[in-house]
Length: 214
Image (cartoon, rainbow, N blue to C red):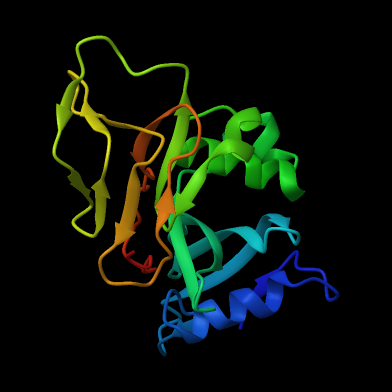
């Protein structure tokens, strides 16, 4: 295992080791007799022990003699679902922003705000179910049409007071319920006010690592 920037007294390293055991990535170096090969390592970018979340960079370096190294990077938000199983949600690099480069909980907040398309200050009000969440809005857009439920990402069923905006966004009011049909996540309910139903943004990966699927 090739990890860097993980404190020995934190929860992050054991969590990431479990992610590797689950096949999300494989660290280490492999090469042939002609000194051509691949090295993969994992670097901790940010972590929040209180929420049990860590942001990592998975770096692949393809090398060969007399050639420039080819480097590619995937980024993940890693944590646990209700059953205790590890999830790895592919995200865009947080290092292009000051908040992302700050590390720690600030980096985790930045990544979460990008996943849910909201401000950091609104994260505390989100009601999450796996990679789908209810994100508070000031009001449901005028012209949104009432719908008889909706399904998000083929596995999150929305029932109750629901509306579809002109751009296809689903909105709900108090009393609406979201059920995860495979049953891995607990049902959630809309509280006071209005919400938009958001399928968390997923970044593209290079193929040398494998995100989990909700």
